[in-house]
Image (cartoon, rainbow, N blue to C red; front, side):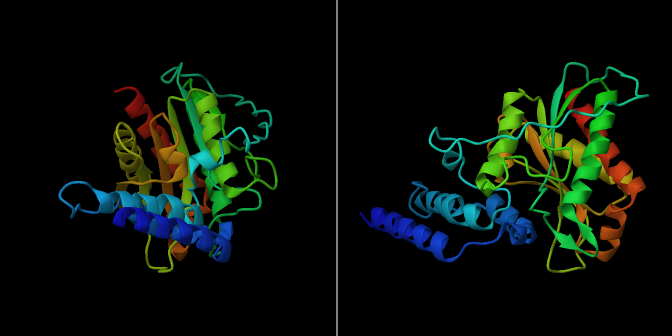
Length: 291
């Protein structure tokens, strides 16, 4: 009975909080590291093994913190029901990679690349750079490298635009990205992002993964990004971001660096540095898929 009262109060709080305290999508990007920490947290059981507190934490995260704060999150069931279908905007024709020879090392593999944000949601903005621009530039370079290696590459976007139809909710936008990966039966899903933090002294690259086989993919990609760029290694971590927890294939979310850090923001705008990041991701993907 006590548990039912707690759940009832939480549900009421969710309704009030969602009505009175909405957070703009553009502001949510700066909360990435907070959400990652919350998502990776574990709450020890104090009720003789019934894990009530753990379940309450999961409810709190999925129903309150996720939809309100998590730029990557929302509840999948709210965007995939027949009454609320996701409208996926068709991708523009992919540009040809003239002069690129198919090496064949990834022949037969399907890889979905997801440049984070886009369109009306630029992501983190600081030090004269927008996250969406960094994400897309690196993703296009990665696309070319993977295509050269023989992979079938599917981009969730190839221009500065939203993936779902204009005017769609954040949940629908994220679901549209997941739907592309699922519809193409991707072997792996790579979401590319730039980080931000209120503390401008923080810098470095990190890679998030949901669980299972994805942890190996995250390690390979993270190690190779650091090897190629020399960036500070902030390691890998499990997280509950929407695009990670709702894709069924091995998936990762790469945070290339912090736009809030002056030095790293400058590097992220350099074509040569962007190419190094793309090369690092590519090397990690090749090693993962060929082991």
